[in-house]
Image (cartoon, rainbow, N blue to C red; front, side):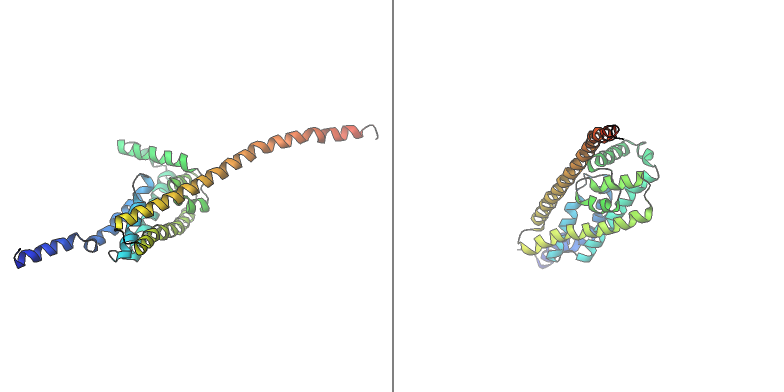
Length: 237
């Protein structure tokens, strides 16, 4: 049996490793990860945000702080990508090997997620894979006003943070699984919905492109009737 002092020291060491004691470090780390995720999409920031919601359900994290950290990181990341392309600063990234990798990743995400820079796209884009990076890069290239981007980013970030943290919180409240298992469930649900939304958007784009391609053909097909009409009326004039 351990002596009383040794036993107390062991208990204190275990307490230091519990989520409740290191949870305050979660907020700045999560905000930084969410911000960097805009420029480096492979960073699994969504998993961290969902995990924060799961910890909040257990009382090991503070729900309002988790939401605030997610919102702050999302806005900062949006403005980072937007500023890089609006100020034409991507050449700075190209000076470094890691910067070229980041620039290539952003370009790839933009090509995958589309080039729409509307406010609706900036709000909804963060719910589909690579959509957040794509819309913010497109907004910078299109020189959309900073105020408009800030408004769309703030609204989208609040909705996104509530959704992601809420996934973790609801799974944590309604299951007896450990927080990491609840986080995996939340990530799975979030990915499934994101893929579904991306598929719907891709289908709409395909239909729109098809209508644009078919439209001129229909117009040209109608031209012979229009031209023939007057020529047939000439004999009776």
